[in-house]
Image 1 (cartoon, rainbow, N blue to C red):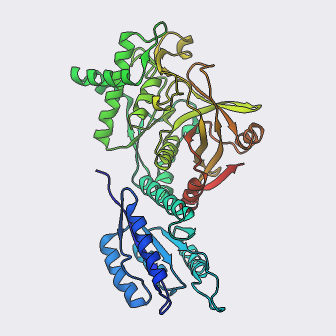
Image 2 (image 1 turned 135 degrees about the vertical axis):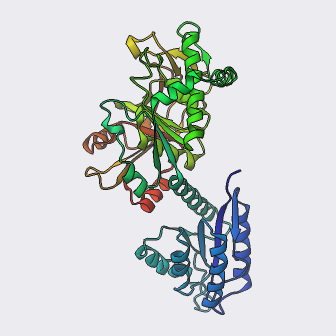
Image 3 (image 1 turned 120 degrees about the horizontal axis):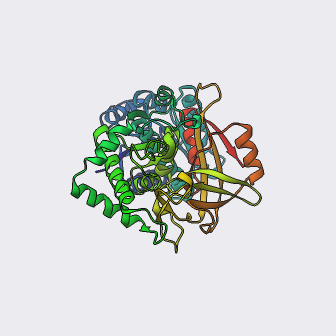
Length: 457
């Protein structure tokens, strides 16, 4: 059962400024927060106007341990309260201000924005992550701002608990898949667990018949076998066994995401003897997010994308970057749930391994159209921190014009500009493609985790 996300609601006001209109807004705001799926609200049953009330509420919050504080400035408020909560609880804060009503007889009514402005300075100086929502209770901007803050905080929390199983390390010569595990753990949070290919292969070979049968049913539910270019029965059996074996690694090493050295060892006949592209696709399709070619940072970017969108990401290369559109592609490891409507994923022999048409298994289909965000997490040039490339566009209706998993993308910035940035700034060649525009959320994550963003617009 998923853990409830706790919000500490802190309605703040100045003594003698509270009125029934503001009390109604407090009740409505608390009820809205409580209505959000998977959310539990603590506090907010009364206005906080004096420091002694705040201290008592803080003691209650310390017992409840909220994941996020929503400091709602009903009016101007005491400057000591929010910094005290932030310092003691060490969680992000939403500074929620409201539009100033028309003065009645020249009298200032709320002064809510000024309170948020003051507290933003405090939190900035204290290095406390914060968000700002400036909207009326019950309005669409308030809803969007609060829900974005929750999504981002949940994602940052997930990254802090993330454990990546790197199977076999990176592939030969792919320095773009290199990972500084201590830098990653210190700056962003994920822990890297190294798993040998030998252990995975031996586990696949020792599966019980019923385990293999179950895995076979799973992969055949994802895709059909190509009638003329499909894998042999033995190759298909090995793909199913590997799918089950990696699942066992998840349980044994308590990891939630994988990065797999998918070649050359798995392809070699004396070690395993198949292309594992479709296996990676099946794993991602069934909740075991897996990055190809041992790319741990790619796995982290995939996890971010999934947490923010609720949809599966596509780990890809960019193979076309000129003219009206680019092409995101990989060799057949995309999850079947991203298949273009009207198509059916097919299990094939690889078009590239050993000259093509020899070894399975790849899962081939074009990806669905829609609004997309292309992103890459990587190290800064001197290895002293992280940066993130972000670009948006529209995935177009794409046929299977090249073997594997293609999708054409019309980038908002245009291919020429994106190409110049990618090459000129030396970005890694792997990306996570997610469906939806998540630029605001990614920028929040960059700000919170001190990642240097590069948005190509």
